[in-house]
Image (cartoon, rainbow, N blue to C red; front, side):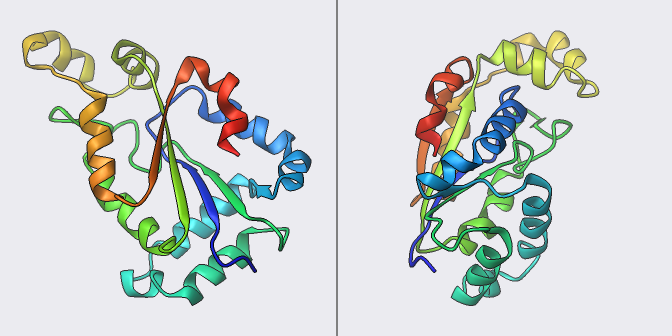
Length: 192
């Protein structure tokens, strides 16, 4: 077992690149293994993660909890880098923008995962896109959002900067990598 793992997390925001990236990583599992990385099966990894993160913060911070987590998701004992993608981890599309705050439950969602991966190298990859793209593609079916935006356009201010700063505050030891959604296909090898 490795003493310190490298984690690559894509936890949000919602993006059209999430599913294609998952397929790409799944299709390249042999190549990932060759470079010491692993992208565990999405469904079982999410179920394991959900179950683990229900534990208390003290339990999550223990090495035994981390070992249990790693042993339940990895196929290869020599894996050094664990990749996890779930763009709804920090919040659902329905709750992505509430009272002008992007992903208001972000800090609450991230904290348990931070505890579980304490002492390990964590990179949070944030695939960002222009605000218009984000609203039109990712939040188009959010009830009432279009009406709210069109009725009070002067009250709407949107900044990815605030979102990124909140993540930095919630997980200061994590490395944050910002990706332009349109450039992900060119940059995905850096993800592993």
